[in-house]
Length: 327
Ligand SMILES: NC(=O)c1ccc[n+]([C@@H]2O[C@H](COP(=O)([O-])OP(=O)(O)OC[C@H]3O[C@@H](n4cnc5c(N)ncnc54)[C@H](O)[C@@H]3O)[C@@H](O)[C@H]2O)c1
Image (cartoon, rainbow, N blue to C red; front, side, top):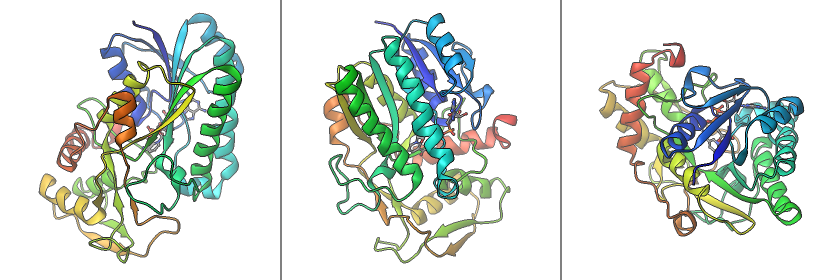
């Protein structure tokens, strides 16, 4: 059955790919985005765009009045860990308080499905790796706290308002499609920063922490292709979750910073100089998903997330868009 899906944050990196896949599967899509970190150019022509904030009651009331929304994929949020430490209130307001405005309007409008962009940051420094969904949650930043807090809100709404929800805990989103890629300012993610060196936009890439208890001493992360992430969202709209469910989205395999830089050298043919730096406070040594629950619930597993495919696709996009969406 095709439905009208509201995608908040559909002008962002991950949201724009989610929009493309939902349209390709025959859904009607409305994008709500205030363009605070997203790009108008990233929104597919086939989607209806509403320019506004998730906390703007007037905009949201008009949106639900105009469109028969049956499901929401909620990606809109601020997502910079360091900024959240400097300005936690900005994060609580956008990621929790304003998100509740959207949620209340959704419940009032009879929306029955809600898919939420959560994050592996909810786990903090894990005791067990790969990390299962029932691992203790102890976020290390206000950003991670906002994700945990909104998951709690969704659990509460499942009981009080019978709202079914799936919280997708992404590990490290990476890669690109031919049309959509990562264009953040500032950019905090490793792969676009490595590729910026290959494009001559930066002299060297910083390697934060070389003395972790990992095989080569650098931090290990579970990189997941943005197309695999988008596929999981489309599947999450198709299942009938019982209450509020949380699922890891990762591959179950980690790559170290050095492995990423080495492979990027091969993919780009550029020497990509790197500079060793001290650890950053709060960065765990290894974050790798136990990914079985997403496979059991959604029939999903990562298919395009080899590090080679991630780097090659990101490189194609960055080379074609050296100034991001301004290219
Ligand atoms: N990129 C990752 O590796 C990663 C990992 C875990 C979780 N996440 C989560 O996934 C989601 C998307 O991340 P992304 O990397 O695509 O970020 P992004 O910054 O590219 O996209 C976020 C989008 O939300 C919009 N937005 C922000 N606040 C808004 C508001 N109040 N009203 C309307 N629109 C608003 C922005 O303009 C932007 O288009 C976020 O919720 C983020 O926390 C991302």
